[in-house]
Image (tube, rainbow, N blue to C red; front, side, top):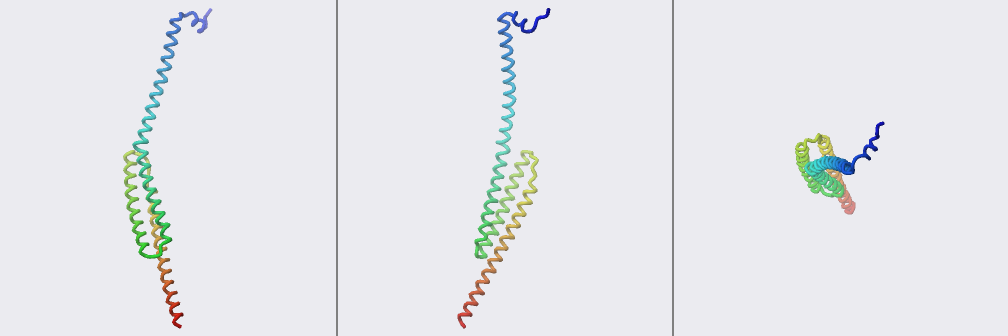
Length: 166
């Protein structure tokens, strides 16, 4: 008659049972420690990637977005301008933005290349150039509107003076 594994276990001495239990616990703890060490290494690599690559990329991107926001606010201010000289200052501000943005994209490309990431910034460059072109058109159109408004005011004043002289 064959004995079941549990009935064989009952026949073992207490010392052997405790030794087997301790060996089982040691194997379980060792396995858990090995898995923990493996995942700790994975987390360390992820944290290193974030600190070395992702955070600088986010910093560069945030810098570019801040410059774009500043240009957007300046462009909104163009609609309140009432002299041609202010429009020229806005065009200079637009040119400065374009240079700053190009430098920022260069830094961003360098970081992406150093991290060997498959990110292509050509669409960003194209959209930035289109935005700058539209902004320049808006400034020039508003400048034309201001010139025409000044001319209309001068003609109105001349007409009023002529009417008063009659």
